[in-house]
Amino acid sequence: MNLVFINKVYRILKRKADAFVGSFFSLEKTLEEMSLRPYELHLEFTNLCNAKCIFCPYQFQTRKVEFMTDDVFYKSVSDFCSIGGGTVGLTPIVGDALIDPKFLERVKFLRAQYQIDRINLTTNGILLDKFGIEEVLNSGLTSIVISTAGFEEEMYERVYRSSSYERMRKNVLELVECNSKKKDPLNITIGLRSDRSLEEVLKDKDFQPILAYNPQIDFTWSFTSANGRITREMLPEIMKLRVVKNRNEPCVNTFNGPIVLPDGTVMACSCVAAMDAVNDLGIGNILESSLLDIWKSQKIKDIRSSFGTNCLNKTCAGCDMYREPELYRTFEGRERAKINHQRLKGQVVFRKSKPFEPFPGG
Image 1 (cartoon, rainbow, N blue to C red):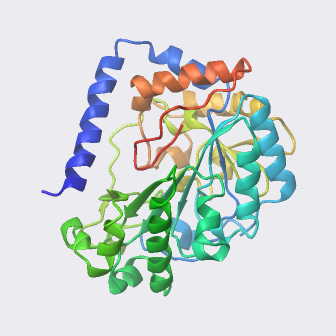
Image 2: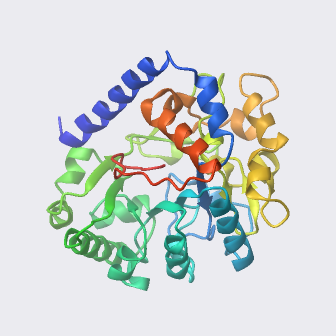
């Protein structure tokens, strides 16, 4: 049994135990404090992608491809900072943020705002060299997740359906190499979505130079159908589809923070099922209302309260990315709620410790 699997199981069990202890605290109070303001802000610079992964609903997207306008970007950031700021996530619902020609200048602008704490990115890594690896590392990002099938060309082309394997491989190797030389290295995770076993993938020849730098490794076993768009027949046997038995409590994603789309639409959730779900999950437009007013609007309250009822919208009712609010039963969740309250009162709060999860938030 490999260490990656053991670590993942350990994290899950630790969180379950933490949540059990947290059951003696008031979940309602924690969620109420998370509802006061957006703890995180997610920005979709573009919904265009340069891969066509077999497990991703991007291939079925009907939303018009767009790039975030400056008006939307600066208004979103200004509103977020005016209510205390915090973490900014740059991972689109679908797409890759590095495609945006303004990616680097926007990250640098975010870092220049004293209210912004962590800045997170998930990318397929194909375009890291577009701006320069050192430039990306020094831009102000605090964590990068590389989403990839692995480091074997035939598998990469099967799963990501991209001919950019060699470019991606070189970029990732240079990324971890340059990061290892930094005084304050970024949190870098290799997020594997492979059609072979983890044991096999970790032994691939091209992976060894990257593994030598000890990046965090995460391996995805279960995938979303994105409301039935991705079927069992479309995936290799090793890729399992998630099964959700009930949705009785509000989904955790409706408390973490909204995502602003390129046209200014603010969505209650940034999971892939929300890709074309503006009618179900759109809660306002950043150019028409303040971020705080949108986050406290009746629309998002109605979405949260509809879980466990027959009024739940079609997107959420069929979403297998649903997560119960277990996070907010843990110490980390209560800490976020405390910080959220402090930021709303005007305090500038930075997380002292680096995120330790492969997919960091907060």
